[in-house]
Structure formats: C-alpha cells, structure tokens
Length: 106
Image (cartoon, rainbow, N blue to C red; front, top):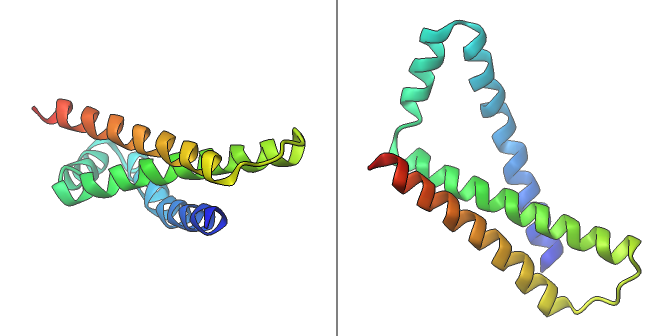
C-alpha cells in the first residue's frame, strides 16, 4: 500500500512539473505575462489543487525517507506505524498549507 501511494504521489508531482515550467517560462516573457498567469491561479479550484500538490509532495517525501531508513539504517520496519507517521506528516503539511492559503485570502 505504501509503495503504491509513493508511486502515485510521484506521478502527481511529475504531472505538475510541466505546469511549473510553464509558469517560470511566462516570467521570462515579462512581468505582465507572469502577472496574467498568476491571476489565473487565484481560482479556488486551483487552490484546492495546490493543497493536494503540497500534500502529495509531503507524502512522497515521507515515504522516501522511510524507504531510505529501511535500506541504509538496517531498521526492522513496523509497517503500520511508519506508514501512519508518513501520512500524519503529509496531512499536517497539507493542513498547514491550507491554513496559510486561508490566512492569505482574508
């Protein structure tokens, strides 16, 4: 289960990269082009996607650290506990980001 979620979060991040490069590319076209692109991102649907992206990044990070610890530190894994910690970390990151988004919009 953890391996599947780690792979899916990696795929979500891979899908995000072209959009990120597009945003960076608009900055090269000038401040006005970048500002137009950033105005599009004020959409509430985009904000929900951003929260999902941050949570996906946190899941991918936590699961990756878990795998590195298992492989390099020769730890005997307690699967349920370590996966729960990974998801708790990811949820906390997503909620903190959501709180920041909510504070910034008021």
